[in-house]
Image 1 (spheres, rainbow, N blue to C red):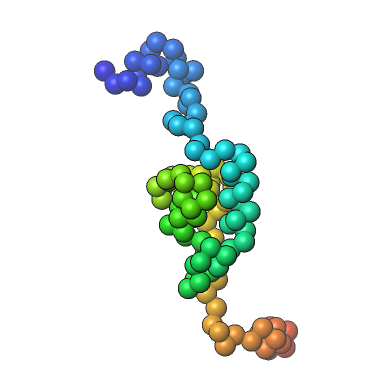
Image 2: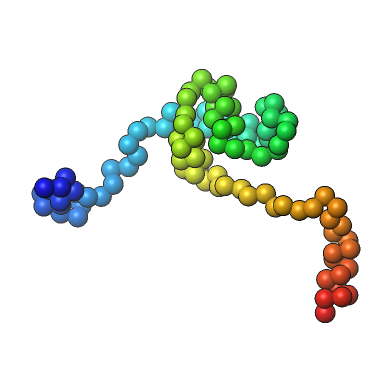
Length: 111
């Protein structure tokens, strides 16, 4: 018999409710505040000069450097989501883009 069914038969729907996360978070509340401040400083402040976006790998590296705590990429994704950080997809825009010309076109030509 399946484990969930046995629990349901013994305790009903209440027995099937989540007991919360499987493990405790490795970063304390104080450490999270420090990490968040460091993430807001940006990747350049941590030596990532080629691209100014945070990736899970980069956040994992920063956590390791600052707190000597190992996280998997999936663990970092869950950590960030738990603290209301979302995935940011950068807007892809041409370098030659001229906002003033676009605004004028929207006002004059488009109507």
